[in-house]
Length: 77
Image (cartoon, helix red, strand yellow):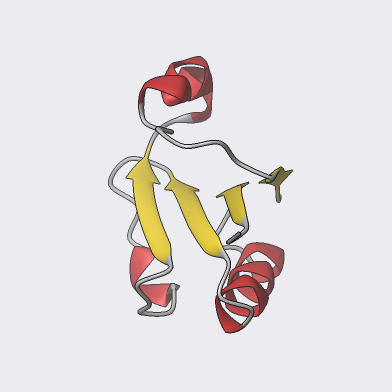
């Protein structure tokens, strides 16, 4: 079974490192970016990455977007 993670702060230093590591291990990553983020281009191009734009005050609504169970939710600053 393939692992799935959700990650806030995906374009920060820790988030990029964790995303790269997860993709190399073929883990599905849902990267939550701020709306209109200009740093989304920093994420590696991979079929294992799905980008969701959401402000942190809208995280309660993410269950509408996350249509499959996840294994881990990371919050990176």
